Length: 319
Image (cartoon, rainbow, N blue to C red; front, side, top):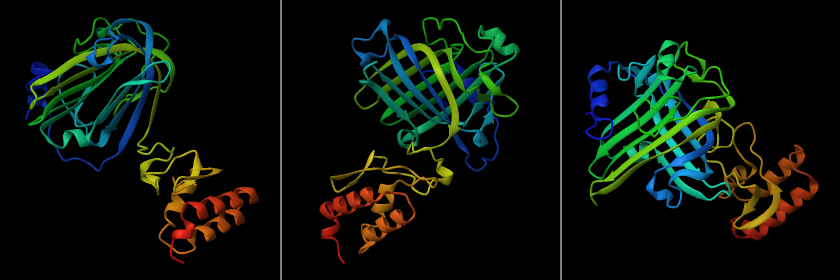
């Protein structure tokens, strides 16, 4: 089913021209975008409306799966796809770190929708020249509607292809937005300044109310990586602990050992390995001895781990 709100006429055309075909095995990757915002009209930003006297900071993540990509004709850009955009995340915060807005649009949001539309569009070469952003443009959107709500969330780098904003401003600091366009386009990594726009339209069908608005500014750092759900630096396909305890130090039932909690090459932290021990008699003490024998902890650290574990939970476990 095609959308009936938001990008109505454009989406309808894209739905009619979407190609069909089988979907390959999922191969998700992520684009990480950071930068500054200089204009806002999202109502939940309260005192930060219109041109901003002091920039807000943002972090955005686009999760893509190029193996799912199905070509469409929508904006007449260089490459356009449906299905490849799998999730969008956006966080806006003050320079002091206060989070003002945080939204993730993924399968947990989309699962109850009656229809889901996923779009990605890229302009380079002559098509980029025509947009006014000769270095290139990238656009992603997730649109979904169901009994409970309608959402339309979009990210743009370069041209404002859907005319959501009040003028994107000039580009600077990069010759080409894309590292490669030989297959599915991949953004150029690095620190530079490039026009950025985020759009959020959300409507609660049950309450009968909603909002729409944009934030605009400049991306100052872009990186392209594999999916790392727990943020421990190890991609999900190789992570043996996909939901790592990433606390700074090893803590046993609220008792802090003070010992650093690094993540190893398998994606498991020291704390993860202790958690796996909690139902096995004497496992914690054996694990500490192994860490000491392998040189992973010092004598002082081993003693601190023993004491914290005994106080925290070791004395209450079966032996």
